[in-house]
Image (tube, rainbow, N blue to C red; front, side):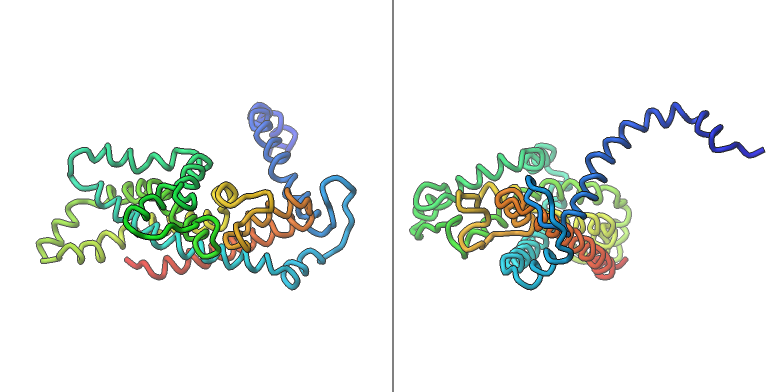
Length: 301
């Protein structure tokens, strides 16, 4: 005979009891805020006074009457293009280098991985000092020593975003290196030996063996880097935040999540910020699907 629902629940009551705390926390801190923010995105809400239903007004204002949103879109896209390709390429080369039979390779792996386990806030503070203007930052000090003029890295509309991109590439090398290193170690050495017998050179082995067999790792690293680039916030906040706002001079480094924070927690336009949050989610969701298909189509076995 089939067991009734009540009998099944009684038999599995202990299991449900153990799962209940995690489910409750998930509902309270994840599902609840998601539903609340979805409702607020259709309202005028400042976090204090009762919300006022305004329908699609927030979304219309974002797309048709908000130049800062489009500035943030452009900066985020530029940041993504400037960070992901060079970051992945350098990480892969670094992984290949430390995968060789060299002395102290475990030491080098540890050194390169340290930024990954270091707080992003701490790294941002250090790099903010390195990029300090005039003669006070270490980078400008080196430029002056070489006879070049100092650059106002974080006070210039031209250099602020590139400075943050340089820091982001450096900070992400260790994490991606470890992932690529794990992928490299799954490739059998016999495959390379057979290729050498057939007369393959170093470039041929990399292009026809290493890269195709690293396809799953490459797809994962690219997708995660893409998602992370659209969610960048801490380093933007630390390196550009002033009493006047966030995003640098003329919003030259304003990204989507930084703009969301600025509208929600500095200007207290919670309804507007909620709408921005869902737009960011849709952009990341659609872009990730396109990115996965693009990477899979470009990296063939």
